[in-house]
Image (cartoon, rainbow, N blue to C red; front, top):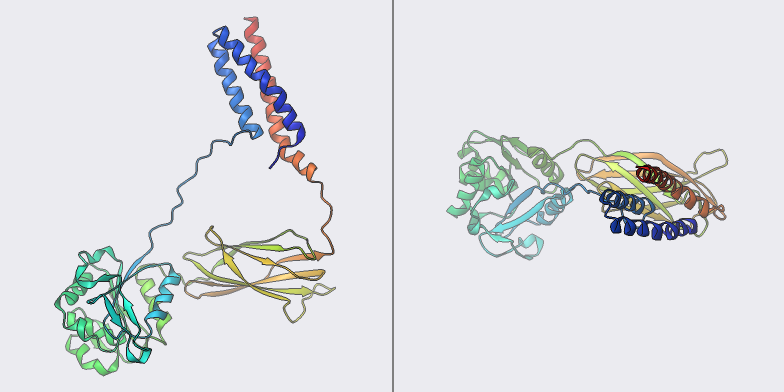
Length: 384
């Protein structure tokens, strides 16, 4: 922001005098005076904004995301993409793996090819991941017949990773021998395989967590439940909806043909996924009309939990804003009458010079105080 003219004139007048004072001290080799002069110039510089103050910024880098390994087989299930969307919503780091570089979707999904991120036999240390999940598919015959694949699953279980399997994929856990004594669910066609591996089987139930083993069935119907169970197993799940910290509009009041920015701050233990707002016009008594006037989704900003949107084309009147918020687990909350505002024919006149004067009043007072102190000290030193 450009400084007011009286600040610029003050700086123009005081700066040469200060430089001359330092030169004089240098010639007379009065070191203490020189040090004081430098401190004075530094204080003056910071106060009037000629250079920026010294600021220390804390390192606010977020913690590393949870890493989940998608173990896949040829003829992978069509639910893969939908399951992936959920974990991406969580903000997790997803790695896909299979015994071949390219695998194909099941025929029901159209046979779409997929190139995995890493070949399963190239994984040296499974503990680089927090979770191993065997994804849905038609049969998992390739995984079940491969000793290396089964060893990776056994290693993950022994290292206390969360190990999960979707629907028919529970067969892979049975062949790996890691469900002995566990309660499991899975596709009912393979009940005898689960029980032969020592598990107790439950048909058509929500996902079952038993220790660090999670099994599920009906991947489309229980998709969100299974993802949430996996999140809970790594202490990531939060059952509470976000909390509204603040809501504001700028400018407020607004005016016809002027864009208004709505800013909302929300707090959540994990992540806020989506924020929408509805704007209702208020009648003369302050009640709202039945139908909303404006509806818009809000965009996230670089600041976590901060969302913004632009409101435009509203008529003259008074309005109220309702907010509709989802976190990454789809916990939902509404904030009714989060903020009210008015739209005028035109914005009221404001005195920006007065605002600038207030902005620089405190630094100006600081400068004046420093100058007085400097003068007193210089006089005292000269008397000595």
